[in-house]
Length: 169
Image 1 (cartoon, rainbow, N blue to C red):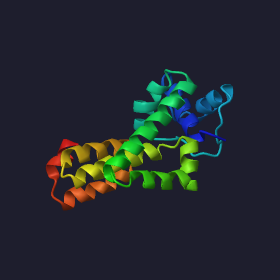
Image 2: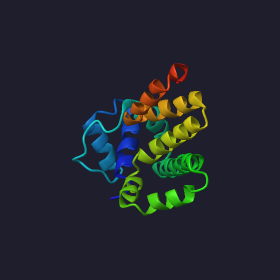
Image 3: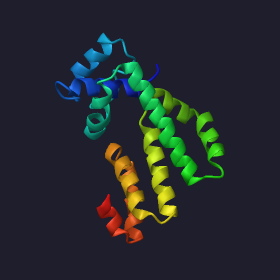
Image 4: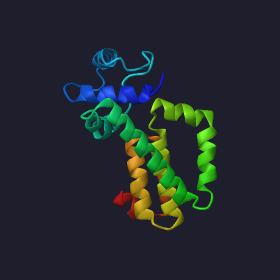
């Protein structure tokens, strides 16, 4: 079962164009009609409204296979560029570690959003290390718009009294 997460996000994007992505019966009908792998036991709604609205509604305007290629290409690019900025001398070793990790393989195979979120967090931390707090806050705000857990990293901004960067984001 490949791309289970991606398929449900994509179906949510298709359904959102005419209804609402949290309409479980319409999402499941689309998945079944298109014969896309999915998990009927997955919690609904699947994904945040921001993620579906900003990413998967536009992706649903192109073919499923093209959307998959674009999604996985973006995942790899954002993750690897973030990792290479965070650890420029050893990024390839870290990348290899992620590639051989069974959890990473599973998440990537599902089409999970975690790789993009991680890449955005890597970009943010790299900018914090360089003292570019405003740009770091923007990376973190984008990551937090899609998944809530990166928002906890804004505590660093509060501790370092980077209030303007928080407002900038």
